[in-house]
Length: 87
Image (cartoon, rainbow, N blue to C red; front, side):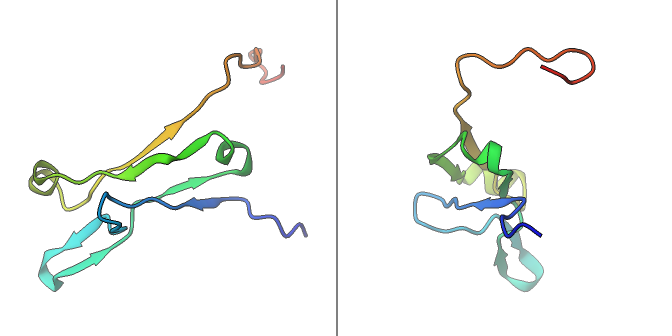
């Protein structure tokens, strides 16, 4: 079996360096449950420096989860795929 991982966890944090994405109020617990998982092919397209956990007062009112934002840099030309999924 190949030792290469099928998916890679992309490291993201908010502007303070916090990585939590979910707040469970009953237990006053912060955890990271929302994340970016990318295949090796997709990983090469992710711009980690521009990906982050979004935080604002409005987010905390709207949900108990904080959004994970990621930037993808697609190449200028993508291969043409036919209806059978072939180039």
